[in-house]
Image 1 (cartoon, rainbow, N blue to C red):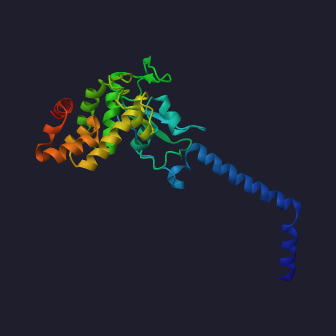
Image 2 (cartoon, rainbow, N blue to C red; image 1 turned 90 degrees about the vertical axis):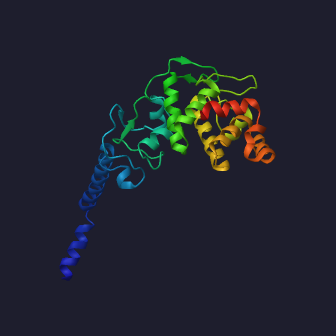
Image 3 (tube, one colour; image 1 turned 30 degrees about the vertical axis):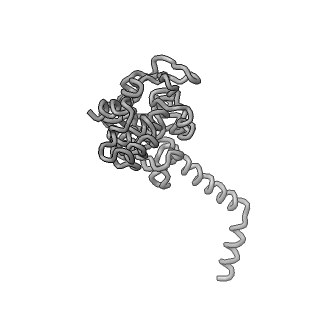
Length: 252
């Protein structure tokens, strides 16, 4: 037994043995890299992303992730946002996508911009693209997509380069100070729609009433709070005529 043990010890220290061990480790590393490259090892195994396993929906475009791709870069190719793609594809962490994985791009979101707007050269896409994007943003934050589309239509007619007489900017008609507080570029229609949906969701949560949330978006929370204190159940009578019309047009 002592002789066998000693021989094994001598053999394990042989240069040829060390070389074989190094080659084995390199082979394992190369195998793992190959599996990652082909998607066999990816987010599902590592727990970093959770792409849907089924096929993309009818009419959707399919994009295979390649080396060096980022979700924001893929979103830019299809003129959408990385948040939209992450939500649609059930990606837990948008910072981790892997080569070989599939990204489904919903139908109606791959139309290319047709003109260029002002404001840092922001690309302007067709009207229907923004209507579709607005609906998606509304669904994501839990507000009515139909009412949100009516609201944006009332705000700007879905024109990303709209500027009001009061100085409100863009498709969501944000005042510069409000846009800055939300951390968005009001000239960017994608950011503006996302900001508008988030702001409306916060107002709905604050007031518990969609009509009051609309009034807050149009005239400001201070005006709504005053109307509720001064007129109680008849609070709309204490709103500016423009805001009353705004609510009636959107709510029907």
